[in-house]
Structure formats: structure tokens, C-alpha cells
Image 1 (cartoon, rainbow, N blue to C red):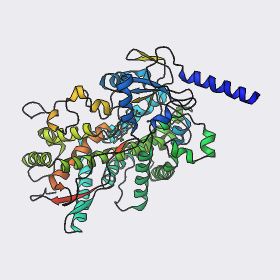
Image 2 (tube, protein in one colour):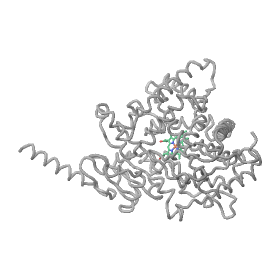
Image 3 (cartoon, rainbow, N blue to C red):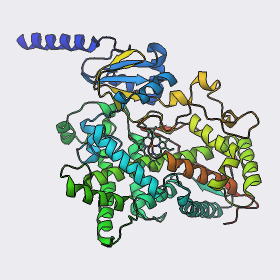
Image 4 (cartoon, rainbow, N blue to C red):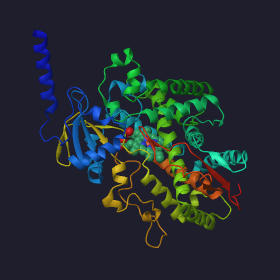
Length: 502
Ligand code: HEM
């Protein structure tokens, strides 16, 4: 009898607590005791779409609880998203046992750290990557090598059957990672390197099975240890990182061994970071520059930079297969400006239509529909609502890139919308923010800007892409996890006459 009475009291307490909200908390659904609104956000639909629906009922800033006491804020639409991203008090990252399980159970790397630690590490990482070639034309020749290799691979596959049919699943990621890895680890991988292929598959799987809301549920570490299967329910399969971490550690060790003592110029990012570890640890024993942090940072760069750019290239080809008239117009411009050569960064300003196509694909199909989760580091305000310290924010980039007020016909694929009236120049709309904005903005944007342009324009210059005769057009619908990926597809890639000379 006593047990029943206590249980009933606890239940009533939980129900009352679940329905309570801090003062001026954003409006939102109530959910159920202990789990909050979490079960309703896992209904099979991509979370960023559910959040857009919630915005229709509750407005652009909706608040609810995930778990017994974790406030969660869904941020939708240009005004709320930009205000949130520019508010430095909302620039923290959550840190629960599921998230830090990626990085040896500690808060390490650049994506999921915050405060002074993150500022110092992000500043150093960005400076070094810029010096090593991020956003610079000096890495263009490396990109051209990778582009040639990719073109050869596509031709080889196409020639292996009579109809130039090519399987585009996973084909771009090798080239993209090779560019990144040349800057970070100074090496190039062969397409058929089995270990490398496995690492890339693991990274892809991590992003596909990820659930941006469940990953924030405050599940205790001991439960994850006792029930490893919970990791997959909560959408963070961190064991997938183990082979990648092993590979990075071995690469760091090789770097230490192979660096000659009198070499003062670092060969790549890993050398530069190791130099900093030495310098900093000599003068400051509690420095943030450590081996573990190096491994975690490289892991963040490879995971953040591999499938995002590869999927942008894949989606562009899909759109061009679905919209052949846009493909022809792009080819006309490329032929006129580049002649028989491959497109180059120097010619980019003369290729506005090509650039507009790339921008339109990034707008229509948001590779990162939600930013990585943000956290309120202080009590603060968003669109006038109180956001309590510790709230987690899910910020919806897709709702900005597809906002009806900004774009008028957001669901139409219309590259011209990014051009001036006489179609000679790009006109940048302030709501075109595929990489986010503010201090947390994507660190890889300068590299992606160049590699996405060079790869895609070279492919469109070299091949005519079309659907396989007699088969339906390949789908434009993304496979959504933490990010959006194209569904692997097969298509015809016919070398064009007057192919670029290398
Ligand atoms: C099409 C390509 C890409 C897209 C659309 C993209 C998009 C984004 C977005 C939306 C964010 C989150 C911003 C936020 O949380 O407010 C982000 C963060 C990040 N991205 Fe990218 N990204 C791309 C490519 C890359 C590449 C190539 C790299 C690595 C070289 C990279 C590394 C990172 C890192 C490290 C962060 C975390 C930054 C921080 O928290 O300070 N990304 N990216």
C-alpha cells in the first residue's frame, strides 16, 4: 500500500514537473514525464522537417524538454536562426556522455568543445589550415590531380559496359578526402586501398544513423557501458570511430619518426600541431595542445570534411540529370569560357551561371539541415523569449535556405535566382547560409568553396550525364541522419566530344 502511494506521488510530481516551464520560456509541446517530447521527435521523419511543422503551431522559437530536465529549443526561419547564430551566449556545445564518447570520454576536438578551449583550438586550426592551403589557389594543382583521377575512374567504369553506365555510390568521397588529407596528413590514398575504404564507410554510416535529437538525451555513462546497444538507439555509434582513431594515431607516430630534427617548416597540419604541442608544453604544463586533442581535431576535420563535400558533388549531378536544360546551359558557359581546358579558379569570375547552379543545389538540398547542436552558456534571450542557461538549441539551416518569403518559389530549381538581371554576376542573398554564420560557422568553407567548384565544373565539362534509358530519373530525396546524403545512384556518363585536354 505504502509502495503504491509513493509511486503515485512520484508520478504526480513528475507529471506536474513535466508541465512546468521557466518564466517566458518559448511556447512548445509538453511531452510525457521523464522522456519529455523526445518520443514524438523520433517518428521516422527527419527531425528538421518535424521542427518546421512545430514552428507552424508554436512559432519560430519553440521550447520543450528532452528527457526529465533538459530544455531543448527548436529554432526555425531566417530571423530566429541568424539571431541565434550571432548570439555568443548561444555558441556553446552540449556535452553529454553520448557526445563525448566520440573523443575518449573527454570534451576534445573543435566541433564539440566551447569556451576558451575551443576559441584557442579553433583559432590555431584555422590559421594553420589557411597557411597549408585552405581557400588558396596553391592547392589547385593537387585538386586537378584528383579531378583527373576521378575522371579516369568514371571513364573506366563507363567503358566497362557498352552504355557508359557508372555507379556513383561513394565515388567522390575518395577524391575529396585525398585533398583534405594532403593538407592535414600529407598523404594520398589509392582508390582501392581496402583500409581507407573501410574508414570512409564507417564515417558515412556514422552520419547516416545519427539522430540529432536523441543524441542529446542525458543518458548516464554507466548505462552506455552496460548496454552498448543504447549507443545506436541514441544515434551516436561512437565505436565506429575506433578504427579512424587508430589510423590517426599511427599517422601521428609516423610523423614524429619521419620529421628530421633540423626541419623547421611543417610539412602539413599534423607537423604544425606537433610543433605547437612541444612549444606549449615546455612553457605551460596545463596547455590545451596535447596529443589526444590533435587526434580528436584531425578526427573532426576528416568526419566534417569528407562526406559533406562529396554529397554536394553527388547532388549536383543528380539535379543536372533531373534538369538537363540546366546542364546544357552550364556546359555552354564552360565551353565558351574554358575552351578545351578544364575550368580553373582563375576563370571562376567568368563562370557566373556555373556558380549559380552550385549555389542553387546547396540551397535546394541542405547538406547540413541543422547546425551541430548549440548550448546556452548563460541565461539569454532569443526573439524576446528567455532561454535558460544549459538549453540545447537545434538551429534549422534548411528553414532559411528554403524560406518562402526570401526565395518566393523555394521548391523550384532555378539557378538564375542567384544572378543579376543581365546574368553576368552572382548576387549573394544574405539568407544563403549553407555553412552557417557567426563564430561557429563551418571551418571548412574556404576549402569546400574551391573543391566543390573545381570538381563539379570539371565533371560537367567532361561528361554528359543522363538517366539510364528506360529507367526512372534517380531520386532527389536525401537520406537523412546528422547530415543529408544522396542515395547511391547509377547513371550514364558519356564523354563529351572536344573533351578537355590535360
Ligand atoms: C558542403 C560542405 C560543408 C557544409 C554544407 C558544411 C556545413 C557546416 C555547418 C552548417 C556547420 C555547423 C555550424 C554551427 O554549428 O553553427 C559546420 C561546422 C563545421 N564544419 Fe562544416 N560543412 C562542410 C564542409 C566542411 C569541411 C570540408 C570541413 C573540414 C575541413 C568542415 C569542418 C567543420 C568543422 C570542424 C565544424 C565545427 C566548427 C565549430 O564548431 O567551431 N566542414 N559545417
